[in-house]
Image (cartoon, rainbow, N blue to C red; front, side, top):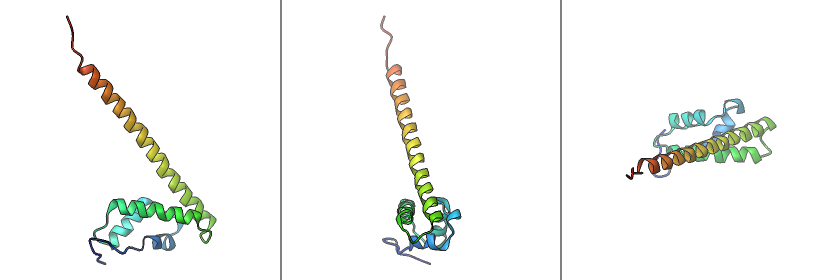
Length: 108
């Protein structure tokens, strides 16, 4: 299937209807979208995945298992984001400390 470059009409939410909750993952979702559609943007795919998960989590027409798995996947994203933020802060602090010590001159 071919889509336009500007605004592809991709039915992201259908993924959660076609596949059982146990196989849901960002990697699987992304692979399926990329397999059937051209010109897909990674950021749009990621945003669509997590937006759809929030809808599943709050939608009572999905099973309890589906809601629970959606909640766990959203939590994993938050945990990864938190770890990444902490690592970036640590790296920035290390860079700042090494920069300030390397710029010091010996005064005689």
